[in-house]
Image (cartoon, helix red, strand yellow):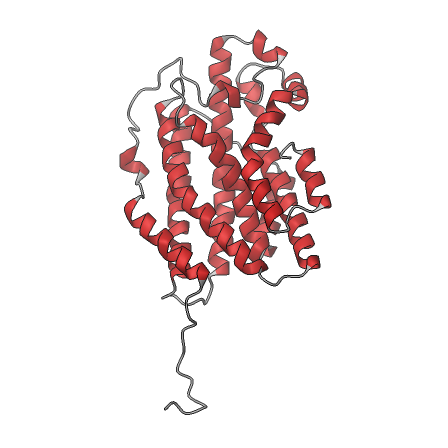
Length: 305
């Protein structure tokens, strides 16, 4: 029998979270991709193919879209998807730091720890993949403005537990719905279809992990903690969604930037697409007490609700 002062470490019994992580690790062992070999990076880009399904363009359905030439539409969608990809790289760098910090000093033999590092490895490959796709399309680096960049730096440094994983889930859920359409778009560039397919498959595991982490962290949480988390996640969503498409994409397509932004803000089609991409996310947040009145007001302001 061990002496009462014996400091031999003990391992906590596996719970529901560890069971989920084990299943995700099994999935990762079977369904993971190396973009360096899965994507034909040397294939030429067909001149008439879009960067994303036209319906997902921020200007689709507006008067300005009707006035644009087909070449302008193709150029715009390539720059829009490039902006979304570079925003994705920015947030994946935030995500990796939050996940790595969350796993600091946790049991390395635990399935949660191993899957968290597997997710970080996935995100590294995704960022390189998106960077190569943007280079191939000739899209510049669209960076968030200084205020948003500072907000992201603060979020990654301060967000913990359900707030960190909630921010991760927001970014992944919204992009997932878009990319499921892009990967099936017959008139979408193969390079976008291929990167979307890889991202959708691997991010589905990341979303399951984030949902489970949120449930675990909120088990037994009081109303105040849930309200604070709900507001913080909604604030993060506001920054992410409003930063996805950089205003300079309209200039790249030869458009008047101010007019384009005005038409995007007034576009009911754009609002409907954002609500569609957020439907499952809103249901999950509501189920877990994270869709409070204050949070809902933020989501409605950015048309996610």
